[in-house]
Structures are given as structure tokens and as C-alpha cells.
Length: 371
Image 1 (cartoon, rainbow, N blue to C red):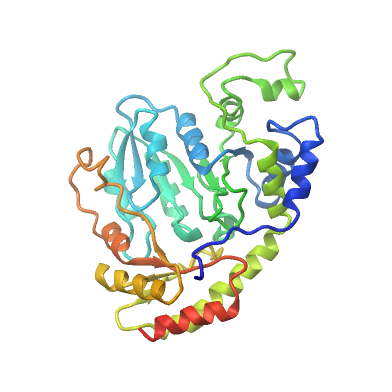
Image 2 (spheres, rainbow, N blue to C red):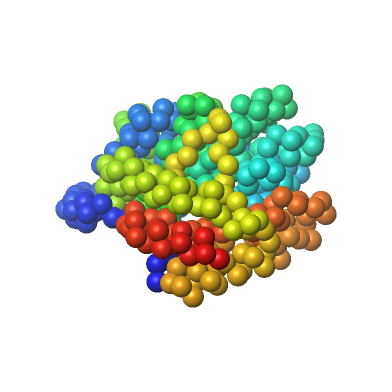
């Protein structure tokens, strides 16, 4: 069986984790955490980076920093992982789900604008598959209505919008380093703060509501409880694993690009009738996070996935619509979100991981073309 995913290891992870075993700091915010923060801040120009134990934790920190009050509304795509919505629900906000655009699973200004009212406080965008939403249009809309923008950049490391790194444009952003992502530490994430207003408070929330980070920098002579927070920072073992991956980022991205382009050359103009591949907007780059097909129907997708499985290939579909989920359907306002439903029924992801060999890619291509 060709698996859907196989987490990448550079070979340096265990060595760096062994260094942590012999260090004086294992619990977090040590040498490797600082190396990871510095990498992202220097390479992508992020104002402030804070590693977290998961992408979900990074989103929860975003929600806490937005300082939401009862009755506040947050606009969230329905076609996303549940963490995107839960982070804001836990802060007491009402989540208002937006439909995807017609041409890819991302939200658009046309879908967002009609949902804004006097109670709206935040717009959350998800850069699906590492492909950017139209951020100039969304930021202009947010500025017009004095709203915060949070980028769910879980898929989006090393991807760009008009030359600007994803995660650097909104007021806040969240990344994921789950084992299915381009770079991983098994389970991990990162908060990015681009607005100076949130920098100090983000460290306090990160450090369990205390100003311990300032204490360690010698900015205060003692630390104490200052705000709400939690234990969001990961151990140094996670950071050491991640650092080994970051050192190999260009190599990882190069190999993923090779795989993506081999798929695309073999499939884009050779698909069975009714099938299609993703279209990349002119303002966005591709970070080769995934290669997906759109099938003509749910039945066609089920048939394709079973056919691939029976021939030794594990493919998978992606998100179920959050607006019609068992948990939220009674809270939803009843609007139909047809584009979201269409992607939920027809999108299928093909295997894409560093060790996927050319002959395995060619096998998958031939199977799909023979359907």
C-alpha cells in the first residue's frame, strides 16, 4: 500500500533531542525554541513568533488575544478543520460560517462582506492547501469595518501572496507542524503576531498568564500572574525536532515541488471526464502542501477512492462542512453554503510526502487515467 502520508525525518532530529537531554532546559523556551523563533522571524519577517504544542493552541491564543466579549461575532470558513472554529467558540463568540469561493476552497470577499454587521469583530481566513486567499481585498474590507484578521496558515509554511509570506499579512496567524504538514515535529504549531499591540500580551498568555518571559530577559526582577493564559509552549524536545526540519526546509520544498509537478504533468490534461485539478490564482504561490482532484460527484469520488485502495493506494478526502456538523447545525443560521458542500463531496487528496518515489507517482497517475 502506498500510504497517504509518511512524516519526514531529516536524520538530525535524534541528535538534537539528545542535546536537550544533556541541557539545563527541557521544558521549553530554551536554545532550540529560540532558534526556531529566529528562523521564522528572520526568513519571513514575522514580527513575533511563539512555538505552541499544536496549531489548535496557536489558534486558541489568537482567539484570546482578540479579547472577544459576549455577543461578538467571528466570521470563519465552513470548509476547514474544526479547530479554526472551536478556538473562537471557547472565548464565547458566535461563529458565523462563510462559504468557499467558486474556484477554490478559500473564502472570498464576496462571501465575507454580506456577513459583517455591528457585532462582527474578527475575520478568519484559511489558506487552503497553502494557496493564499486574496489578502489585499480582505484586509481592505477589514480596515473599512475596523475588524481584526486572523490567518489560519496551518497549510502555509513557505507560501506567498504577491511576494508576502502567508502568516505575515493578518494581525495574527497560526501555523501547524502536525505530522501531515510540510515540516513537522509530530504535533506542534506556532503563533505569529504581526501587530505590535499584541506582542507583550501574547508572551504572557503563552507563559500561563505570567510575565516569566520578561523575567528571563532581565526586564523585571520577579514574575507573577498578570492575565489569563495556559501552558501553550512546547518542550525543547519538540523544538529540537522542528529545528532539524527547518534546517532542511529548502530540500523538503524542492522534493515536494518535484512530486507535485510530476502529478500535474501526468494528470492536468489527462483526467477522466468530469474530473479537474486545482487552479492557482495569479497572486498566490504554491508551497506543494497537497495535490488534490475535484470529482464530478460524491459517488464518483467514492468510486475513485475505492478503486485506488483496491490497487494499493491510500487517498483521502478532506473536511466535512462545519455549518452542518452534528455539533453546530442547530446553531447555524440556516444559510446554504453550496461551494463548501461541493468541495466536501468531491475533493480527494493524493499521497504526497518526501519519500514518495517516481515509480509510485507514475503508478497513481496511470491508475487515475485508466479509470
